[in-house]
Image (cartoon, rainbow, N blue to C red; front, side, top):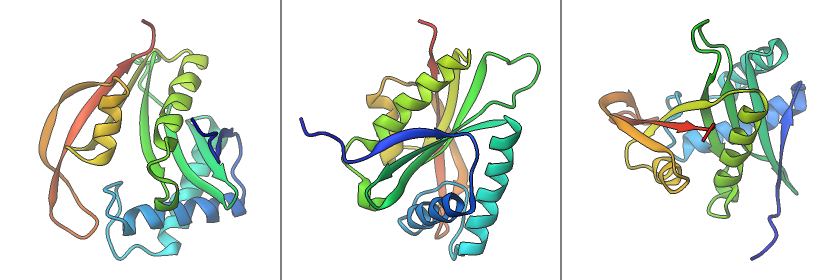
Length: 176
């Protein structure tokens, strides 16, 4: 097995250079067809504005931001949303898992997921929830990693270029 050419770490603060690099990853993912909440045409200004809001959530402790970096910089990311209702202190939502096309199919998505799960455990979270495009690459990854499929919601969202897609909801118990 080859040694990964990237590393994963948690950002406790997010500076302008990191925001710019994260925007590049998001633009690449959206332009590559990923349904992660954005529509084409997707501008750098919109991507930077999104990451500035994420940075505020990281600074306030409402979310955790993990990034993967290779020799060219940030190439992947995932978030844990910690800001849950009072009756759900044990839970987090896993969101916006993104891997730049240059770094795909090398185990980076799985590494980001394992890092998110480990971070959630460290923070006392025992249940994670996420959703993904039904039968998409991410859904296949989550199923390979042992996430439990809850079900599909038809016509849940639009793909970046238009057209409906369904989403599949998954969960992962971390306490057993």
